[in-house]
Length: 239
Ligand SMILES: NC(=O)c1ccc[n+]([C@@H]2O[C@H](COP(=O)([O-])OP(=O)(O)OC[C@H]3O[C@@H](n4cnc5c(N)ncnc54)[C@H](OP(=O)(O)O)[C@@H]3O)[C@@H](O)[C@H]2O)c1
Image 1 (cartoon, rainbow, N blue to C red):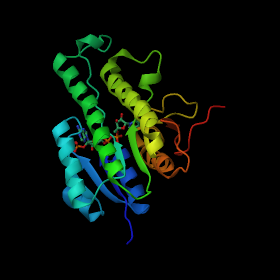
Image 2: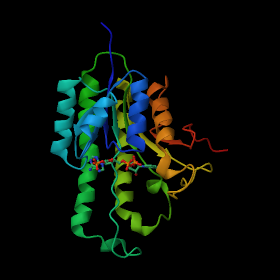
Image 3: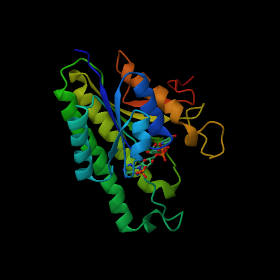
């Protein structure tokens, strides 16, 4: 019997999510694309399985995995693509973020953990030798020495994400299971172009993410947990 692998993307918007989904479809995957308010008809028309999921809510994440398991099967690829910036009222005063917003940011961090836990359970249950890979969409914030202080909550989310990917990648490597923190960088390895009108940069990075994520999934030898790539989707190599 032929085997069709399954992917679940949590946080499926018009940039990273949809491009990664299309790439996986092209590579023969059944793809479930999750967001809080998916356009069910449009996604189905494009061959995708829509899932309603809030990536900051543990119960909702568990329900989404269950829905995918019931309707498609166990996912062997999981992409966590949710990030949320809570702007402090005063840009040079990070502790002016309300405690309510800081708690919401923490819920997203818990969401990454629960998604990784659920993914591990799925990966372990798949007997086929298909790649089992969890990819979280990162940025450079956890690695920057002097990031603008207004990004404190987003930096905290990404730092948690990076830590989880590093530890899980080491812990489950012997089972052939990979966890990556994947980051788009500019040509010099620094921040990508953050201008919304840039020809290539942060806001139209979907095709580069799709290429890079497929490289991670299809690599015969696992790439590093901290994976950086440039605008063409190729691995960043420092000169
Ligand atoms: N390193 C880089 O340069 C770089 C570049 C681009 C993006 N990123 C990262 O990529 C991620 C997403 O960016 P993007 O460009 O793909 O954004 P996007 O195209 O705007 O997509 C984000 C999607 O996520 C969904 N979403 C938002 N909150 C959610 C939640 N709580 N639960 C589930 N889905 C949610 C939204 O749909 P609903 O409103 O229906 O939920 C939205 O469609 C972020 O983590 C960002 O930091 C990094």
